[in-house]
Each structure stands twice: as C-alpha cells, then as structure tokens.
Image 1 (tube, helix red, strand yellow):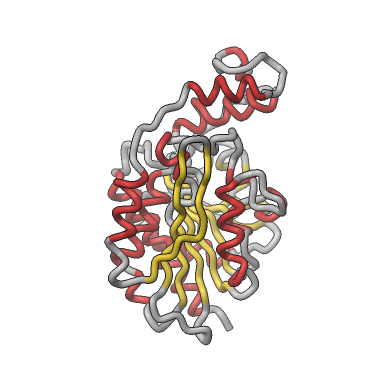
Image 2 (cartoon, rainbow, N blue to C red):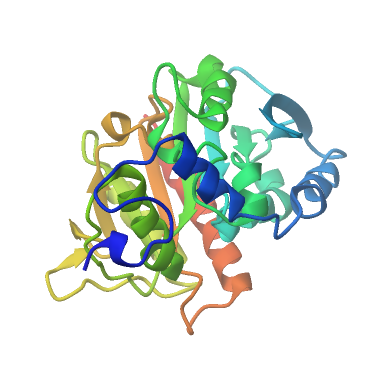
Length: 307
C-alpha cells in the first residue's frame, strides 16, 4: 500500500511544494494551549529554579517564547545534565514527564548536578498535536548546522555552552498509533515516496546511539521504567520499529548523522525514550511517571559511572 492511495495532500510520487505545504497547513488547527498547559506549569517552578527564555518561535501571526529550567545554585564544579521534551510537540508525556521530573524530583539532585531542562522544544506542534513544525519540517531531524527548524536552532544555541561538558542528555519522546496512521504516511507524501506500513510496539523502549553505545546505561533506565510501565516486546522479526533489538527494550540509531536531538551535545551518556501512550495497559499518569523515572535513572547511573 502506498501513502498516496489515502493521504489527502499532494500528488502520488511527487514531493510537496509550497502549494501542498499550504494545503497541509490549512488542515491543522489549535487543539490545546501551550500557555495554559506548559507555561503555567513552568511559572509555578520559578520559586525553586531559575527559568530562562532561550528563544522565541516567530511564525506569521504567532510567537512562542521558549523556556528552560535550570538549577538555581549553578556550580561549575558539578557535572551538568540535560533533559529535553516535546521536540515532537504531539508527544504529550515528553513535555509533561519533563515537567513532572522537575516538580517532583529535581530538588533531589541539588548540589549533585547542574540541571538544564527544556520541557517543550516545539510549542507550535504541541498546540496542534503534530510531529512537524509550521514549515512541515521535523525538528528531530534538524539538529545540525544551519538547521531548517527554528525549534532545533534555538535549542542548539541554548546548549552550546554545555555541549562539550554535559555528562548526560536524555530526550523524552513517544511512539503513538498516529505515527502509523498519520505521520509516516504524511512523511512519505511530503517526500514523494511510498509508505510501507509498519508495526507500533506496545510498550516503552529506548534508542541508544549506535555511534557511541552505552548498553549498561540503557539497561539501568529500562530497569527503572519497568517498575512503572511495561517494556515493549520485539516483533516477529526480533525488531522494534524496523530496528534490531540489541537488549530488552533497546534499539540503536546514529544520533548525530540523523540530526536527532539526543546528539545535540557530546555527552557520554545519551538516550531517547519512547513511551506508548495508546496502550490499554498504560494511563497518561503512568506515561508521565515513566518519563520522570527514566530521567532519574539516567542521572543516577551517570553520576555513579562518570569516572
């Protein structure tokens, strides 16, 4: 089956131009509020943490301020860790899991690490529950020089001072049923390609960096998360989303060559989480808690193994 047989935008086999992007954009609408859901939560943290505006998305008729939450008592002698969420704006627990980590757990690491948390990298996509930005660009393929995505370029600028000193970076994502029903078909249509249907895994999994794998780090995160929610099994081919499973719940991608957010620093310990919010076995509360547990486990392992 090809995406062009059912995707409503574009001509089969022809990559989108400006007209197709405009058609695609006209079909989207705001479905939730970045200000109400995210900025209000960030504001509630100002009494305990430093909150900085690190950029602003500027789209026609819309501006979105971008915020990061940082340790109040920053100490250059301490290791620095980075947490990012909402690079794909539709992946809800990436945003709210990051905020839950700060609200409930971040003070446990005071005096142990310097924290930088960017909970919603893509607020335009958050409001429209979409993977791409307004330009039909995937921010999580855009962490590269001269980035085509404002969202990615702003985060690159934020992390530049810690790019070479960060000890750990965990990037919080979801794999949803709409990946297969909407976003992968849209990607194929946008690029004039054929969509090959895939299988969405039921459960949590991680993506390690194939160019700098840290298997023990990934397994420490899996061990913590499986206390909160279930881990994705392999499919009949021994794969998850078309990639070989290297250990329970773990696959690998090359972070930097693909322009993935998890490669935005040179941190030794890096991982991308993938929660499955559409599972009948997981509630939204579990999904957020799984993300927060992953962050805590990642920091704990990095601190214990940094020498």
